[in-house]
Amino acid sequence: MDYSRIQDSVDIGIIKNSHVIVVGAGGSYTLVTSLARCGVGTLTVLDFDSVEESNIVRQGYKISDIGNFKVDALGKEVASINPEVSYNGITKNFLDMDEEELDAIFKQADLLLFLTDSFKAQAFGNVIALKYNKPAIWSGWYAKSRTAELFFQVPEYTTACFRCAASSRYKANEQQEVKISSNSNTIFHSQLLDSFIGMMSLAILHRNTTTTDVKTMNEYELFWDSLMTKDRTTPYNFFQFKAHPMGGNNLFDKAYSHLEMHSHNFVSYWQNAEGELKINGYDYDCPDCNGKLHHALNNSNS
Image (cartoon, rainbow, N blue to C red):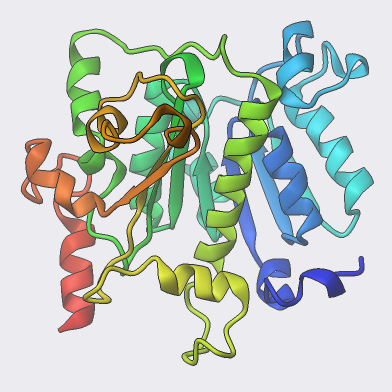
């Protein structure tokens, strides 16, 4: 593979030595194939669903893929794009795996991506990320696919876990499981969000480079550096954006209500999830992390 045209953006050595795990092979089709194009050395994808006719119009799969497991169809596409990538497709639900199986899959990963419509799967992803102390991204669309979110946690950089930042969602699910329909999600929605997830993934993989001079940083080293808050302690790690001019998300309705409608589409909002802890009822007493990320960061800075 010739990576010469992207060397100003990425450290090819870092990318080739990275192992990214993706849970959910639906809308992430473009993301996985694009990570392969960027040279990610090892890709593991978990999904037990098969390709259906309705997937063709919005997930990148082909008519010839119908009836096959999504991870198998995706693996063939990855191999056709970049045969240097080591690809592993897993069709078992990770909610049903024992500790030995989980260890074999997640223990050596460099980045975890949880991209499903299932709240139970997203919530279990938080337990997994904390258990193995791995950087992780959660992402998805809100109702009618008008607004999307991306949250990430990285040990030694972020203070809040996914449950800390989304605790109101956990509390709502204690009463009744909240299900977000993907019926409004077109291929353009999938590709748009996949691009944001991909760019954030590459930034996270470049977080520990030794480059300190911004003039010599590649674009993803600079991307990560630019995410840091003013006190340089933690990054802005909760990203939301609008893909539709109409409302449907209280955050945007409140923050951008003064803007004209034509200015209101594709606007993004970055925040630091630590600020959400007390708002959502947690003061580093989260049942999942119990302040683990917060205390680890403070210890590393002391």
